[in-house]
Length: 298
Image (cartoon, rainbow, N blue to C red):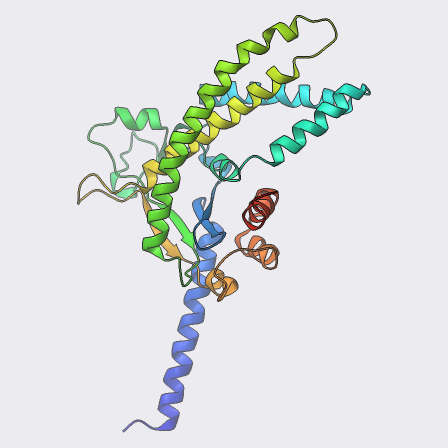
């Protein structure tokens, strides 16, 4: 027969073991160089946050070099407009800023997800040959035969009354498929409209603000499309039963406890969530997301 001391001792050991596991999982999250975090905004929608260490970025990519050039040019033009003393430029800056702020939040989420070729693939140790680096580009990976196994990406989540491993995966599949369709269509639309603004650029003094805006929007839409396509690739079911899954789902107990019964990120707990997840870089996007979902008519 178990004594009171024995029962108490076992409970203390169980509590200590549980606390140790929680600390271990949080440490794993903090040191994971490549991960996705899902943030429930309400009972229907999830904000996807993809984050990676700089060492896993494919810095040899020509596409990224072109993108950096484009971003530098855009940043320079935007700074000129912001600092311009001319009244029409000031009005245009205000108007563009207000328009951008009204862009639906899913784009901000997809923009955190880089295109697949932007990130190096991490090969599992058993499949790493002496002549093959541990981290390789997508282009090199496609040339390898037989295909080596790739380290799965961890998807961290908070377990709530609505969101669990199954419902999250289902929503990610829907979210990515819808995103691919929407942002491909928008990219084409903006590119088709851009030539119509070229005559404005021929006018003396007046800058081609509509063309500038359309090029910026086509860039953002294309980036969102690449992000949605990459996410879709990750959350698809493995092609064969023996294939290594592209993702592994991992609950963070501290995250689950933080969201509590409400089960979503809101203006009251957002600061604590950002601190726990070390996600300061999405503060503005998350604020916009919560605002748009809370007041959809604004």
